[in-house]
Length: 205
Ligand SMILES: NC(=O)c1ccc[n+]([C@@H]2O[C@H](COP(=O)([O-])OP(=O)(O)OC[C@H]3O[C@@H](n4cnc5c(N)ncnc54)[C@H](OP(=O)(O)O)[C@@H]3O)[C@@H](O)[C@H]2O)c1
Image: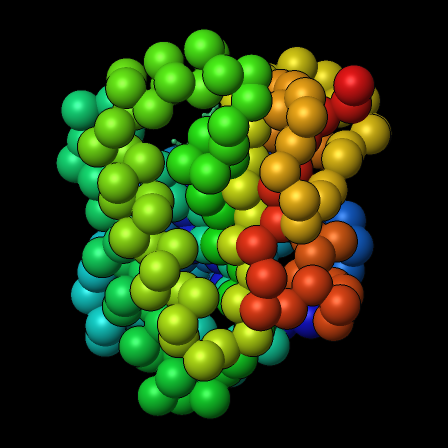
């Protein structure tokens, strides 16, 4: 597939580029910091820009079969751009006829169990989750073939190869490795079954 990846220099984004290349996809990486892309020669293209800039976003997705967006703030305090970036990406996708979007979110936005840890996360990450909830509303009303992939706590440990994906709320929202999360995002974009839905993803139990 011709994939455009937003958040391509992020810790999960890098794993999506590596695994996407291994799977034979032709990847366009979008970033504000092209100098941090380890090996641009493995990519179809690198597009520099901010995800809130429609012209830059258009240049990156114009010929894509699908878009994967993995946007996060640099810290708990922000700046939080995920809803603004999603507004730009969905607008440009609607305009250009690119229909398939997989975008990451955070599971605690909707999670309820375990009660105390989730309540604490909602308090500490209130601004980030408000931005994520606004993004989810925009994406789910976009009319595109979207999947919201709600991730749990991410680690940079070696891949474990097991991931739990469900449309239902999770009993045990376990941490997962970024490598396993990247593989799950690619599995979702390659399948046609999980469109117009949000899925909740956790690591091995
Ligand atoms: N960390 C966790 O434990 C955790 C838990 C639950 C869910 N999640 C979700 O998992 C996903 C991946 O997290 P991560 O830790 O791998 O992310 P990360 O390393 O912090 O990378 C974030 C990416 O967001 C991009 N970005 C931010 N603002 C942007 C803008 N205005 N325009 C374009 N790109 C922008 C950055 O791109 P450039 O700087 O290259 O432009 C960067 O590549 C995120 O959606 C996060 O919310 C994370």
